[in-house]
Image 1 (tube, rainbow, N blue to C red):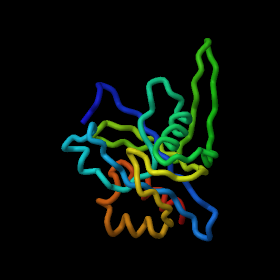
Image 2: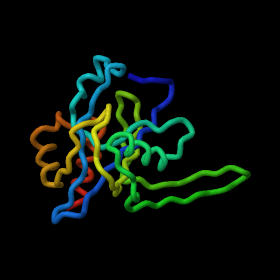
Image 3: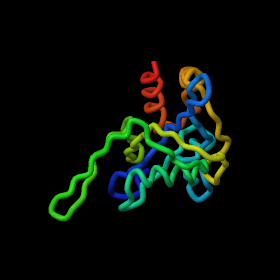
Amino acid sequence: MQESGFPITVVGAIIEDNSSEEKRILIQERIVLKNDDTTKDIKYHKTLEIPGGKVELGEDIFKALRREIKEECNLELIRVLENKSDTYFNNGDVSEVFYPFCVSQFLEGPYFTFIFRCEAHGKIKDTESAKNHRWISIQELKELIENNPKKIFTPFLGPLKLYIKSQN
């Protein structure tokens, strides 16, 4: 369901942990709050997702990424991997060109999601909108997507499949 007459911008964070023998990413269980409880949204309750959320009006995309990571899992963003961005100044205006890992469009929204590969640190904590955080290996993620794709929050399914391909 569209919330306004305009597309809604979202950020998503594929948070990598390279500290073990096998690379892992953070996944979490999506919690649909009662005030968000529409027939459409409730089907995503307890699906698995990566941290992310809406970019606020006028908010810098990287500040939104940092804020969403903190709000959803209590981690501090260390860095965006492969972060390439350029800032341009012209006629008193500023624009930024950035290169995320990928961009996806959820046609039910419409939501445009900018997905970034990141590193973060801190103590993971459940929040009101995300619970049961856990690190999952690339192989486990691949098996989960192959055997039970309905368990993944639909807007993140394509980007996670792309991420798996990028790791081969």
